[in-house]
Length: 455
Image 1 (cartoon, rainbow, N blue to C red):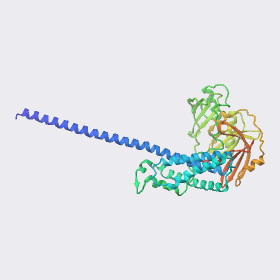
Image 2: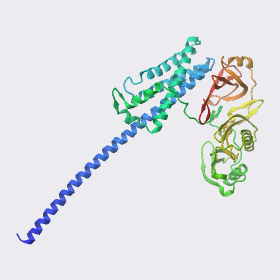
Image 3: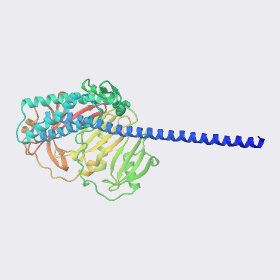
């Protein structure tokens, strides 16, 4: 064979080898893509199912928490129309909790006792609600059963919180553990069985206060005046934080909604940054959001309250009383309300937060005030105070009572006797209608790591 023929033969063989390698590479790439696509689909499906499981778990926690709180209110009530309302809500919360539990990957018979208990709570409270609707009263045996249900629900609530802290918050994947079998039960079931034992502190919730989230009507009643410019809005901020330089107040944007506002960032001393909203109508301070710079307390709570009152009056022209205060870390949380004829006007609430280290206001919310504040013809109490006192259930120690205008559902405002009570080291606020003696609302103070929450 000539040299030329040999070269042609070798080139032909090389081309065949290259083509073969390309085909193999293409097959490998295709296989890899298919494998990765399949993995991606599986991971995507797993993430989707995990989202469903997580949502059901958190809804379960929320429904159990609401059930426990409302049960405590029923036990603090006089078993009238307000009790009927609560019992109906408890039944719905319990039924929802049962639904949430059934949508978690719990092995058959894994937590039968818990499921049965939640279902019985829903059925029993619904029965009691129907009984009160028929004008009947609850027997002592039924009240004892409600007390026992409350104690059991309190344990369940605490144990769910413990499970959440120990597993869910540490990255525990419900979907994956629901597919890992250990004997008759999957791994998720084995872990959640712990909700039948132990107890932990109530989950952390932020500070609230009486009627801090009261009814907000659609119509804004308390805001008037001419439209202002950005420069005028900026001057409103300068009046409150007088030492702040112009260059430390930055106009950021506008917000359109129930309140149309100019929005600013304000830098205080020690690099504390605030987000401030000024209404376009009237140029009034609507909100301030920010944090103090330390946990030190160079300013007293009393001085913080004085400052809060001064700022609120300067912005609204109205005199306020402090109706609630709490200290969390280095911040004082203060709720202010106007008082007319010795009646606290809770719908017109303003909430203020003061940094106790610097003495500066770092939080403010006047949405309720500007929504609800209007000239009112306040009625006089016609229901005898002594009779209202007797409406407070036995076992509750009344620490304080006073008249107030309380925001009720659907934008209603009702004159009530407010009772601050203590039972079993738990503080309750009971509101009894000052016109007809009906229990309108009961709030229970829940002590948490981040202050007090009223529910």
